[in-house]
Amino acid sequence: MLNLNRRFQTTRWSVVLSCAQTSETQDAAQRALSELCRVYWRPVFALICRRGHSVTDAQDLTQDFFVMLLKGNLLSLADPARGRFRSLLRTAVENFLTDKQHLARRQKRGGTLQFVAWDDWMAEAPSQLSIYGQGLKSWPPERIFDVRWAATVVEQALRRLAEECENRGRSRMFTALSKYLTVERIEISYANLSVSLGVPETVIKRVLHQLRVRYRIILRDEVAQTVANPADVDHEIRYLCAALASAR
Amino acid sequence: MNEEMNFWGLTDLPERAAQDCDRCRCGSFARVASGLCLSCLLRSGLDSNEANIEDFDTLLAVVNIPDRDWQLGSYRIWKKSVSGGMGAIYRARRGPSRRVVALKRVLDYHSDSRETLTRFQRGATARTLDPRRFERKSGCMSP
Image (cartoon, rainbow over all chains, first blue to last red; front, side):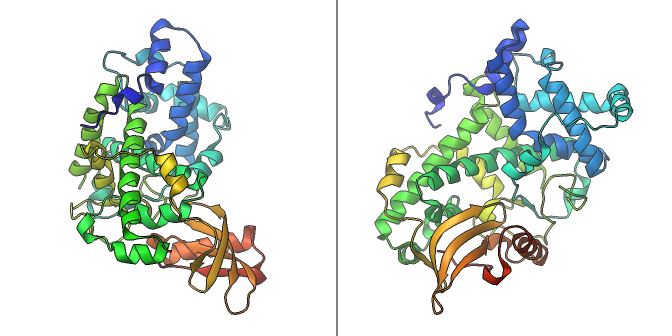
């Protein structure tokens, strides 16, 4: 196991949970929760769509859900002893959808409240997830939620890695090498990459290795932000891997 | 987002024909950027290979693979103007004519989707680029 847990002793979700436990309303907790919601709105939206709502209605319901969440009404459900942001969010949105009062309230006021900047969220994190296979249409909502969650974690990690490279003027390098993040080394043509990027093969090998290492660190950090205890990172990754495997 | 969104908001892109993962061969059904396998990317978070970790920021600073002055086909790239989910727009000079253009490049993973290419071209032409200086390059080779 990577010995990287020491990097994130305090996670966003642990900050949120600590304040939920004491019923305090602290800016830090609100900011942490807002950040988590900004990253993980897609699984909620996907689950709502899968429950049979149109895209337009699902957008409204997703916004209403996050309005309620960010106001703190649902944090009392969080159990710090077993807390994972993913599981709480899924439970919370399922409860939200079965509560007819929420739907009625939304219809009464026309569903016009724009508490979250939907367009900003979309523009900030465009998804490049592509799905293959025929079984997709039979997936239950919980599976849709977990698959979308896994994709969000991975895409967020890739986005952060790309930004780090771009900030150093190395986006071309990232574009050329990132497609080999998971490819077996024996299948990579270092000679071709060397020619196209204009650096020796040894440099390509070194950079690609460090790119993989850095990606792993960022991925684990992303996962860690959603669990209360950093020691749960491996378990959470395995859960998501299992969710992907079962969805085939 | 619009009504065309497919599969309950799971993805912005249309479903494609079933295709084996020719890189990892893990049988996964989902890909993300550059066609990378979602399962493999996630599982690599459990990888125990911790040898030879360098400071990544320092490495980026010393490796001489700059974004400026590289060749993309017959275009000499000056800089990236903007990038998004489907590709990027570069400021470039066209080789033979020496004309300065805004070069739009579709990510290679999207280059086989006619719908994506149409939307990509329409968006760029309508919003940001002078059509007289708009040149498109899809399905690009590696830089």
